[in-house]
Image (tube, rainbow, N blue to C red; front, side, top):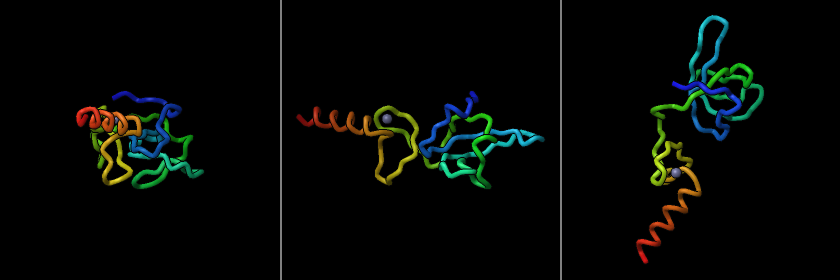
Length: 102
Ligand SMILES: [Zn+2]
């Protein structure tokens, strides 16, 4: 598992695995950015302040995540009918459909 520093953590609301040292041991928690100070990282069982999250990593098996139909990247759908991770991938799929139909 590759731990990254928090300056590279995604702040778009997707879930990540955070780790912090609570002066006794390392604590792991699935968190996501909500941006509300003083605890902008929301997790099950409590929120974390920005300064206290030490490292983060991508979730390997995301709860409720799915794979993009174009690039295969895992993403967290914001709509029930979402199939693509981004507008760019949605456009790519749309153009491919159009080419096939022509
Ligand atoms: Zn994609």
